[in-house]
Amino acid sequence: MKYRAGQIVEGKVSGIQPYGAFVELDEHISGLIHISEISDGYVRDIGRFVKIGDTVRVKVIDFDEETNQARLSLKALKHIRVRPGVNRISMKVSLPEGKLGFRSLSEQLEGWIAAAEKEMKR
Image (tube, rainbow, N blue to C red; front, top):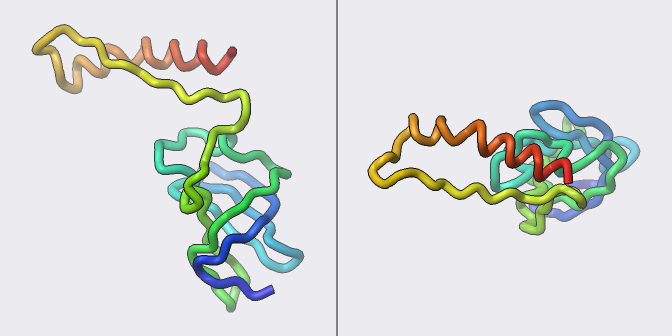
């Protein structure tokens, strides 16, 4: 099958690296979903969005006919969600009036991380 930019296709996740997920589109064609194309939000762990063996619908951003490799996007489909059982966490900033800045945010960071870890264990 010949692929072209803008096409929506299905493939199977065949590998995950810190920079992205590899997807087999067919027997001879593979592609990469770069970490920046997983979600509009910050992606710390690609495994929260896809796992090896998952079948995913992706949009072809670009296709190199010489190498038979595709650049793919999950976020372009705008129906991105975290894997089942993983909740998105909303952190509220509650700081004393007049205490805004990087220092006040960094003081809150440990509490936010602890709350997120607790929520993820649920």
